[in-house]
Length: 310
Image (cartoon, rainbow, N blue to C red):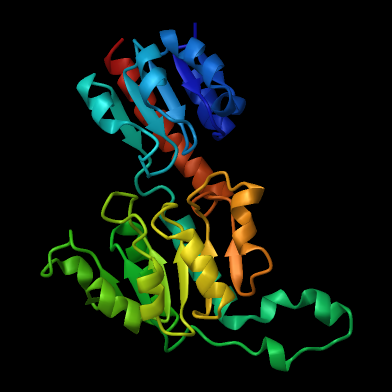
């Protein structure tokens, strides 16, 4: 039986590297076949997943020989880390490998939402020439508000500054005297909500961050400000956000993550027909380049672990 199971898409060159040393099953359809996965994982020493495979409960119980779990990304909310630690199963996130992709996504989404010119292709082609309705705003001179100031948020801040923005951030876990703050102003959540023109979220989903962006937060935002969530679904109250957009309470939003994932047609109804709204399928951290970086980083970690424990 296979020693390595890969349940979601991975760069095939990285899979081939692992398969050169260990029996490996690479089947991205396994994420939607939990029973089949539970059967295969019985003899596996390593499990490689993205964000949809739930590494907990019955799956962990079935994986009696598991020595490590590789996460093709950085969030660990789909992995019962405590249970893995209790069984001495190492968990490897791909820390740093997709920072650039997420940062570029945030900046691009901000530019699209502020500029507004990119929504009108059909009208222009139809000969309507809607110049006045497509006049938008510039990033330069605006305030970028970052909730969470870890490595990805700092990549966003670097690019925002280069485009003429001022950066402010909230991060209760980063000491006020930490040099990482640099020129970024350290603010409370309330101050940031009232100050920023663009708000980007960079926090995990925990009890303290769930629905951090709620009706109260949205009311405190500037009426033309925008919010971008490429972190975790549930940090934003999706229903409250949809209502604020429908009422033109804020200027716009981009969601790459949702409270229900994959987003169903039913759950997505609340966002239908909204102007100044971008929805993407949890793809901010995935580009052709980042997929290669993430995949090979995890392949390295898995190969090293299995070599050490052979």
